[in-house]
Image (tube, rainbow, N blue to C red; front, side, top):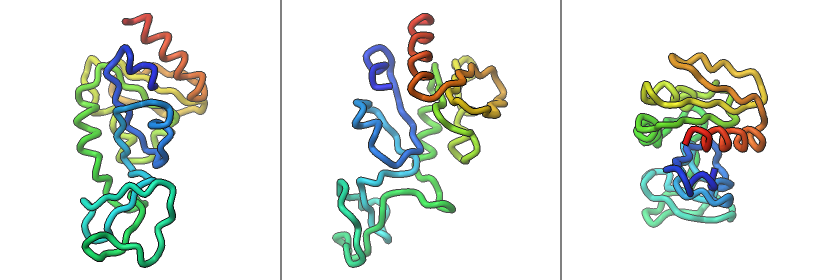
Length: 158
């Protein structure tokens, strides 16, 4: 995905909480479910700290005195970056879903926010129900092979 940034305005919206996209060289990443390399205050979610790979221990507190917690979205919590993800998706010319069963909401519903003329792609080796309101091009391959196929097809279009 990082290589595509040379030719396209790429926005990566990821449910992953690791920093693999950053390590791969992508620069425009929205972490829907947060980031494991960060901690935040339990009382003020706007207080976010870069902690790298250090553990968070009981008694580790923010500047306001509240306990720190991982900067991730736990099951049952709201996804605070969802509005931003929808805003980005609503402007997409090309929208690719990579390695998703499309079963985890609200992220699974993002493709419904794409513009009517957007090209929609799904890369996954498994059978995935991509019954969107528009045509979805399916590449039934693992991400490593599927992204290479997507890249070649995008350059044919460009």
